[in-house]
Length: 274
Length: 325
Image (cartoon, rainbow over all chains, first blue to last red; front, side, top):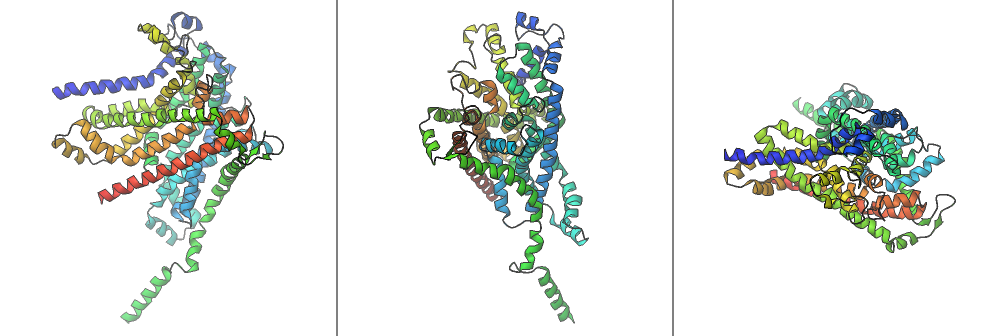
């Protein structure tokens, strides 16, 4: 009995802390569906009287939010697929091929991953202007494919380094060449790790800010993050519009979170341990 | 007869495992290098070349057009006298506190409480739901988190000020992001909120590999929750602690989006950080050489910290494996 009494305060404290973490989301939700009149009369903490969706609709049309969503999906999706493919190729050479100097190659990818984007951003901006890729979604796709693949190579190499040798040996005896071993055996067996990489690359690219901010200046090419960040930076939004922007920015993240929750938490564990 | 068979077997074994000096043994290995070719070329074009260019430009005076003028170490000498530069790195230390030190400490306590208190007494389901709440801000784009918080912290009609007024603490109301004395602490608070989920999830995963018998034995010996936390939990997940500290410290040094969206480095440079400082120097002041010097200093610091972090992590893992063996 005494232990039960002692247990509940811990649970209650943790629930309160968790509530504090999600309260900003709830505040955004209740205010995004309030009319400007209601907001100015009752302030941000009152519950909405009705469902006012014009603010969301106005904001959607004003910033052409559908286009921004499409750009974000296009860029993040392409980067996830391409970076995962590149990671697999790199890791195959390092983890299974055990090429000479692999420690150094791996160290290079680790350092490349740690490098601050500030040290790359101006030359990338300058070079992309030279080759006519400035302000294109392709430029951002290329850059993030390489940056994300640096992490993927690091993670996948250590996973493939422990790949059961007998399976590879058996396939080789059956006459499979290196491509066939990679495509028919290594990729299917490592599908869980590749899945984690796909999810992470997608969300990381979705959330990227600095490079897309510099590279994508025209409205038609901007991602959700950049468009919302720039709008906020201009300080031109009233309260209703800010809440509409916040809600529309939060929703995709919550969808990803619910869809990928298990992969995310499993993946962080894998990534941290090696 | 038996002798010949044995001889033959030995010979064939020998030919299947040629010595390391045999040049033929390298050939099958090194044709794997072809698989590295696309990745290596891409990294060369997107990372190596830009990085070298940036480093080279840091020794020049350049406005982004025309030819860079070689000035040697002049940019770096100017940096030493630049109060804005020192202020931005001082603010970086505050960010390390907010994004590495505080989330690691809170994350440790939360992870231990969720794992061996809530998980054991109330079921893993509740622990998982609570963990999800703490992790949620981590998947939010930082630009969106910035919009949410800049509006909550707004001076007029912001939720925080409205809340303070509602509970009778009206005198505590502040211009949270607009007051130079408070802005940095407000940004720090937001970053704790953003960052907390990462250590928590890593630590909870780490706790799963701790032998439960250790806790049972300690409990039998009469060790309380706090002593078990100190002597078992902390010792067992030390590799995870190093990983988290390294990653979060690097993330703190790189912080850009939050500052851009919340304060734009202001008011009056009160929340300026190196990455934002280099960004404005590159693209607003177009002093590309100087901006490159700032980012090069940042890079060197980050690389040194990464190496230290990796070393500590490997040592902790080795020590753990040694202890197990």
